[in-house]
Length: 328
Image (cartoon, rainbow, N blue to C red; front, side, top):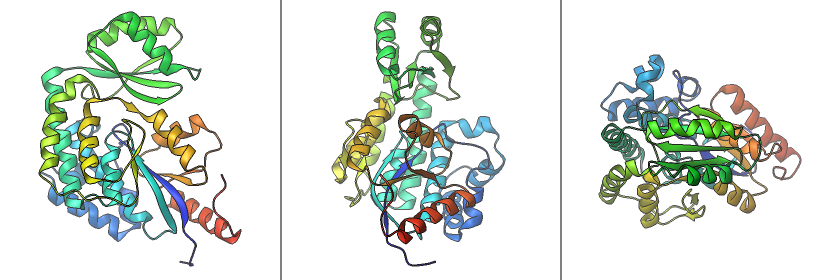
């Protein structure tokens, strides 16, 4: 590989919803380092990770006690594949679960701790979901005023058992809570011209039903070694960067039952890193779509297949041959 100047990059890590049967296969085929991480995760976990990733079924993979460690493993594999490239991560962020992956990539804890935390987080949230019931629905609009419309809809409905869980973009939010209450809310939402989509999730994530899981996960985090990090990870609670171990523990616990303000987070990060390229770590392409929904000209790359990685490598080489960094 030719010697390149390192290009500033913002790394984005996906959360639940990015999964698919077969994820990680291409990464393992491309990189011995990625394949080794998959083998190690398979040994750490108490379920057959490699078999589930390869064969499914989808229903089993969607169970959050299995899904969270699965997605985190694949993201770690993608991070290993990117390591040889001429990249200089200047910031990281993750959507919900993806924040845990971002802290791992930034060096807050080692791989075994990371996968153990992902499995524990998933198990705690699965238990909370089974105790409470509930689900999630996405509301999508053609306009960029979806967050405001959703708040108004919730205020008018007066439903205490529903909350705003994700502000994904100006055109999409996700509601979480009681299944019956969400069903009742669907008709007035459609009357406003909104598209209502029930999500394939196993619980009401980022709602008060997850508070028991958040408190238990806080206790888990207090028992592990967490290091300060050099590359800041931006969090979705206050849309600010985090580098201190004490703050990492706090954010990882609090975000389980609090809303994900992805829109606000991306707006803040883009103001600070307007000249960086953006890279979505595997699996999936959800975060790419959300960023392009904000800015069709955004320079964002994916990292799952050989074709995607060649495209990124070609871009880095072109930037260096031109004698400058990536375009703003």
